[in-house]
Image 1 (cartoon, one colour):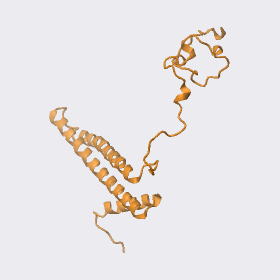
Image 2: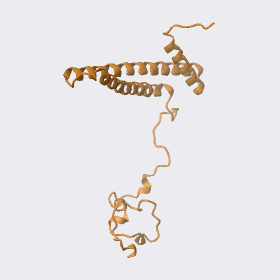
Image 3: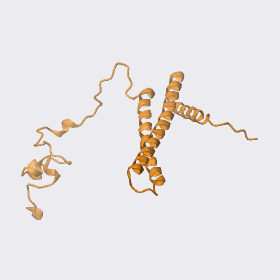
Image 4: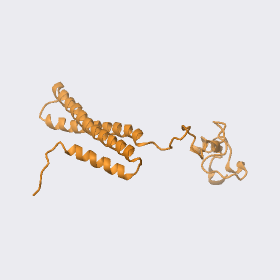
Length: 175
């Protein structure tokens, strides 16, 4: 035996093939191995059947294979709300610990920190969720109006969202 090793083999190679059942690479009669043996002894199936060359989705007649802007809006709004809540909670924890640093660890301090975490989490989730809602609504409206989906819709939706978000502040004239 070369290298003083055991022909039964150990490690991951034994999970899917020759290494764990006493077969050596010479027993496969010159069949090249590329990570897996030709036949899995545990699953009793040939791994080449697991490879998919084409998409296997059933789509309604005339449907696109990509999601539209309206479908992606739900993911965008939810993702922004979750991100805002996580960021706000971390910011609330930081602020709560900073504001109560002179207090001893007690129930009132814990309650004050928890209140800051939930208040900041809700504030940031609401803010980012509202911005995502505006952006998604503008994007869908512009897409339906123009009848085309391209980068111009994204730029216009972002611009309108920013303008509306900043419109609550006063307008200053330089001159």
